Length: 245
Image 1 (spheres, rainbow, N blue to C red):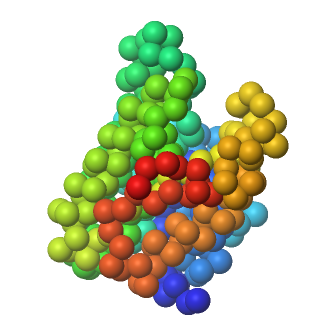
Image 2 (cartoon, rainbow, N blue to C red):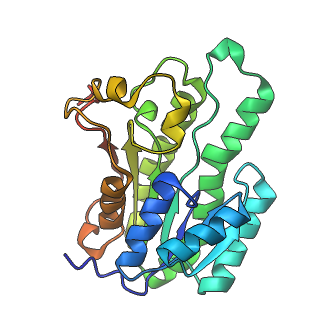
């Protein structure tokens, strides 16, 4: 399928590895001009060469001034952003009693305010050209809270509320806004959890972990012309593991 996003200008957060890298690679394969971003400049350069990214911008999403600078640089490098994919590494594990204010504030900036800042930056041009795609990579924890994922449970749910609100406000301007909610997907991040991949796979009805490339194709579709009537949706990439309707 031709997604008709050739030469569209895309920015993907946290894309030097894992899900972000796979998404960037898929968008490049569809002909988009893609900027990738993460904290590590050396890893970014390596990834850019591997996936054929248009350029790189180093950014720590936990620093609000760095996020604003990231968006300024993206506009300068691309002339604007047609496709925005927000993404961030999972916050620290822990029960409520284990977390201090500093961890809450940092995770709020990384998971929530970075999305607010980026959307604020791309909205005017998207509205002017009456075409834009915003996809927020979150987690099934934002819809079905899990033990020991207090920060993710709370903040991802907030992002979903923002996503749905934005879909109403930005829809008249030709901008779609959606979220993709991954469960256990075979990335380096997953290795931080205790337990084997085989044990995790048993919790998923299809009997295996998700692959980053599979999720990347879903995100790329949501960024396409063909998905222009899909907005305000929190779409599970979960192998059937979520229980909610």
